[in-house]
Image (cartoon, rainbow, N blue to C red; front, side, top):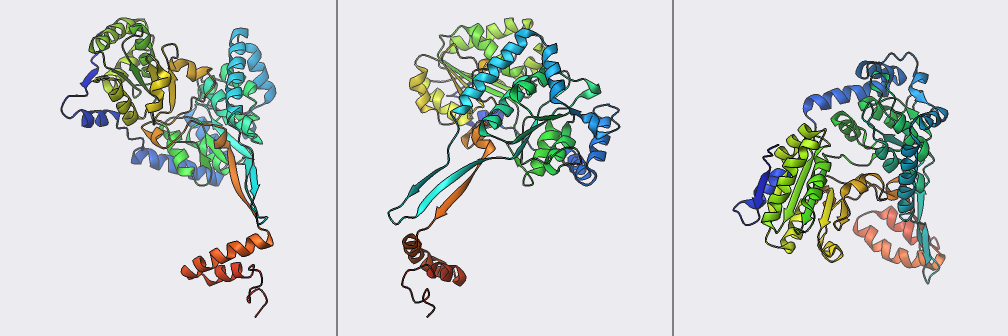
Length: 441
């Protein structure tokens, strides 16, 4: 199949402007979507279960009469696990164990230290009480999304994990429920869309209110998460999936072709880019892609994605490749090169970095261990992968000794008076040892 994929050279006039135009992605929904979501969220907030049932029956084509029908018990999750193949159960359990093990290393303990004056300062780390996990549903199964969103919350010590998953036409996906059971989800509700986000954010008679909502979804889900932010925390507003492959021309071109396909098959807006200093190699990869795309069941999606947002970029050398990689700030960055350990030092912006020729992004999606919930659309410049830290909050600890309070008050008082906040100043001055204010003079 012929593929018309953009080809750039870093030396051509206007290269940076063209690249930035290719990378641009507007994740903001249009006014119609925002208004529809606003109405759904407000109705759920006001009417609770009644509105959730109404929207679920309408959008998912179901016939729910009572909110109790929306919940799936732990026993039902266990039964779903028994219905899938032993091989799949083993893979889910192995992946869950690896993700759990990796995230255990992210745990941060509370800490404190004592100053010479006796004052103690520190930080208390506390898990969130309750978290909501949104999982896309229907016939498309995303058990990996369950594991990646739930395991760090479990490691963090979150008290209760509520999962919502839509079931269009009443179709319940056993693989997703099995993953929920393995990951340790406490409660599952078969609701989706903006109504599920609203139910989690504000609570209903049946669905508990949570402290934070995580997990991917369509434009209605993303818009709802944006609208309820503030009432609850959210993980991020994610754009389409992306991969940037930097290759020196020595990796089997079929491998790189399939790595690029692995993101393009997500949806038509996904982005796959190859950077190489070897112009002939780029053509080899293109030839592999045109041959291998015929073997793909999602070839039409791949074709639209590659021709709409994909690119081949020829660069002068590896140093320039690293500069462009930092400009792109990709969700997934593959360094399919010699000595990736050396070159990774030059990377400042990337969601996840896959190092070497034998580390395809697909392994990170499922079972390598690091989280696959990553910043997209260039937000890796300031954002990080989902992790244990997203399910914890930190409280500052300050315990002043008499001498410590006196010393600090002498610093705070002039600053407070400089801001014309007299009560602040006097509150501090009362703690100054041997002060006239302290003695009531």
